Structures are given as C-alpha cells and as structure tokens.
Image 1 (tube, each protein chain N blue to C red):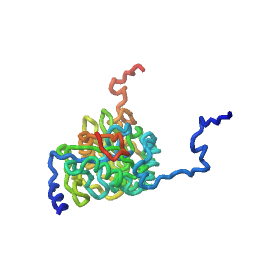
Image 2 (image 1 turned 90 degrees about the vertical axis):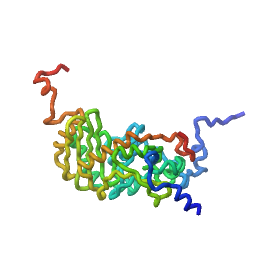
Image 3 (image 1 turned 180 degrees about the vertical axis):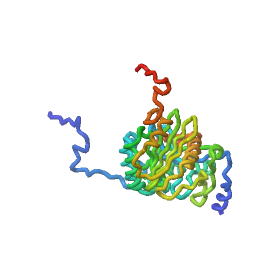
Image 4 (image 1 turned 120 degrees about the horizontal axis):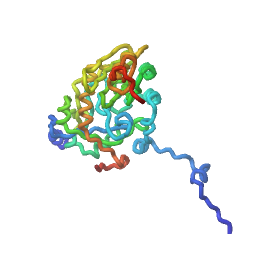
Length: 171
Length: 158
C-alpha cells in the first residue's frame, strides 16, 4: 500500500493554485492590524524616511504630514551632529523633533519647514536656546550645547586634560 | 428625555479626582523599548491647544478602547497598543488643565497646556519649547500606561 506524506508541505503550496489569497475586508484590517515594531528598531535616517511617508491625520488626532523640506533639513542636521539623537519623532504640528535625554540633561531640536528651534537643558546650569534657518550649514553651536547634556565632547568643549591640569590620564 | 438626563449627569467641570484616559498608538507615542510613553503622546496638533482624552467616570475603559480601535487607529502606520490613565489633579500640578468638550462626544475632554501650537511646519520658540517639554515630562511621568495584552479583544482587562 502506498502512502503519501505531506510533512514539510503547507496548505498554500498544496492548494495554492486552487485557493486564491484571502484579503480581509477593510473593517477587519482595522481590528487586526499588522505589527509596527520595525519602525522602533530602524536607524535615525530610516525613521526619517518612514516619517516622510506619513499623511495628514497620521496620529488619528489631526496630525499634519511632514514636508519634504523638513525631512531634508532633518537629514542635513543628522549629518552634522556629533551625537545622534536618542529619538526621532514627528510632531502633530508638522515639524520634526530630535531629542536627547541623559543623566546630564536633555536637549530638543525642533525642525520646521523654514526655521529650527533648539534648547539644551543641563541638570546643572542655565539652559541654552538657539533658533535660526532650518537650512543650516554649520551646527557647531548646537554641537557645543549638546556636549553639555551628552557625554560626547565637541570642539571647544572641556577635555580630560583640562580638568587634570594637562596631566594625561592612563588608558 | 434620556439624552437630556445623561447630559445633565456629566458634570461640565472636570474635578480633580477624575481620571483622564488617552489612547496610545505605536510607534510615535511609545519609547524605543515600548515600555513607556513619549511626550508626543500628549502633544496638540497645529494651531490648537487640545489633547483628546476620555473622562473615566463617564466613559468606561472598554469604550475608550473600542473608540481608539474603530476611529483613531489606522494600520499599519498607527496601531492601538493600550491606554494611558492620568489623574486630573496631576495634570493640573504639571501646569496644564483638563476641560470638558462634550461636542466631540459625551464624556470627552481636552488637556490644554496653555500653549497654542503654531501653524503647520513652524517650530515653537525655544523657551516655549522647553516650557512645554517640562509640562509634558511631568504628565508622562504621572501617567500610568497599561499595555493592552489583548488588543484584538473587545473587552478591557487590566
């Protein structure tokens, strides 16, 4: 007697030609959505690309889509910053936020279509406020302010030799 | 008559001991570890100062969940993952306030930060941005986010 084993086969490969792919109706797709964890694990640039694809009302509360000019400005900032942001997020007002948060303080760069706003608030000391044209050529001021709230040093920031009186520390 | 009676039952003044409920959506309302909230969970859209919430005494959690899944979420970009609960008193301590807005639906409220967001694509001035973030951080820290273990279920069980 001959037996036919289907181990290693799945129903779709056996009946694939007979059974068309089932696409649930729109209402079902709302109730059983796909997982969006891929966005969380993406790099900052990939997150910007994902943000660029958002349409109006992307958050369900009337959030505005992010303009291409804002995305381009965000990528230009990313290429010039000494410390990559801890989070890259769209704002409901159509702007883009790059945020840093550490035990030394927090910083927030909000990028709009034409202008940007920035603050760095260290745990100790007064905050630094900066604003200007979103098409920035040099982010040195931002980098200097960022160094105060992150562990990354930038040109002009305090280096170990400054606080050891010039004595080199062993590695 | 029933409608008028229900309308009168919902107080226009939002009391300190009420709890506001906010539907949380991925990916932008959650942090990278997907364990806590970001400030964006409580940010207003352009040109307004309104963050939609449900008032817990009048809107049950399962109704807030149903509303979030049926109306607010839009997969795959925006998916309901749970609800955030926050004491109205703590919202007020953070410098924001909660008002009744029954024109949306009976039991609907708005958190207002006292800062109207600028036009689309225009960032807030840096000192105002810091002020808003300080308020938002206080609200996020005071909020109790409950990750919905069964988002597909019609029931809400904490």
